[in-house]
Structures are given as structure tokens and as C-alpha cells.
Length: 104
Image 1 (cartoon, rainbow, N blue to C red):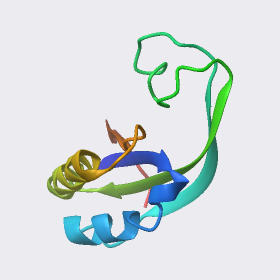
Image 2: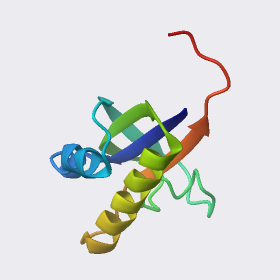
Image 3: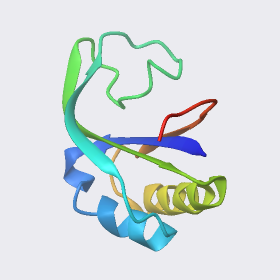
Image 4: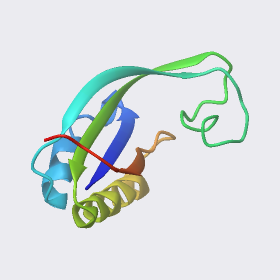
């Protein structure tokens, strides 16, 4: 089992459920969040939000699910395809974390 986390600007929130469904992931959670960028460093965290402006803030969404590696691979493909097709500078971001232990 793995944990998949996806962040995106809120403008894409209507697309996310379809991507999960197409990937075969039947359940996920979501939350509205604020993204902040206080630096223009060229690092993963510095580029998480596309603006290079200091003190940048954006309305974003966070999605997560616990599922199999196979379904996560499907979802990563969907996110990559979505990012190629979008217009603008705000791609979706995805991270996969391994789960060592859990209580069911």
C-alpha cells in the first residue's frame, strides 16, 4: 500500500474526480488549502507554486488516497497527461509515499 498526494490550483478541481476514476481509484479525500511561496529558489519546494514572486499565495486543493502501486502508476500517468494538455503555468504535483505500518 502507498499514499498518493496530489496538489493543484483550485481551477482544476472539476477535473480531479475524473482522473481518479479513469485511473481506477474509487476513493480519495480532498481539502482546500492555501499554497505559499516566499522565495524564488530553484528547488522543489521553491517551484511547487509556479510564481517566482516573493510572498505568493494561491488557492489550491490537496487530494490523497491510500491504494496499490499499480493504481498509483495509473494516476501518475493521468496527471502527466493532464499537465501536458493544460494551458498555464500551474501543473498538478504528485508525490508517492510508502506506508510502513497501518491500523485498519
